Amino acid sequence: MLRNTVVGTIGLLLLGTLLGCAGRQAPEANADSPGAALYSGQLKREVNCARCHGADATGGMRGPNLKKRIAAMSDDQIVAATLAGPGMMPSFEGKLTEAEIAQIVVWLRGGDGAPPQ
Image 1 (cartoon, one colour):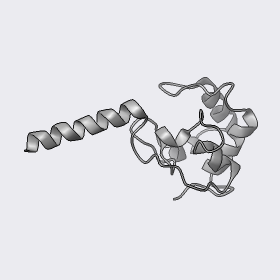
Image 2 (image 1 turned 135 degrees about the vertical axis):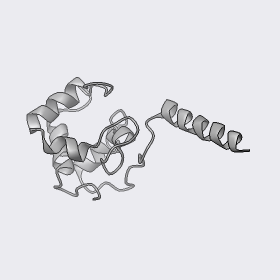
Image 3 (image 1 turned 45 degrees about the vertical axis):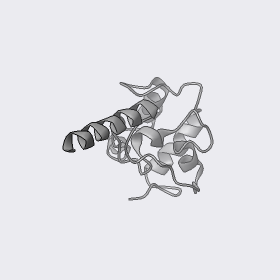
Image 4 (image 1 turned 135 degrees about the horizontal axis):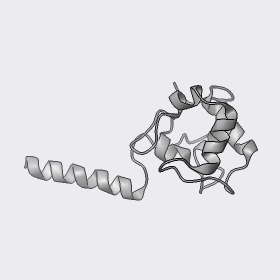
């Protein structure tokens, strides 16, 4: 019985990984700012930061905690990382403009309807 539970749990985790990033990924139903709407994939389906970084930007199984990371980064560094796609992160060049990335950064930094604490 315990073996079935463990195997089932592992299977669900693998399925979650195959379908997208696991973790706190449900975006807020009604984004209250352009940055929140972009971050959660509500404005552009091909852009959904919440899928990997969590709806509250505190990280998931595949994406690191953005709240902690961006505190040590300049806006230019964040734009460059978003466009280049470091590590396992996909590049968002051609999918987001620098102005849209700036809106996400404002939201992540705590302005304009910031993510939940």
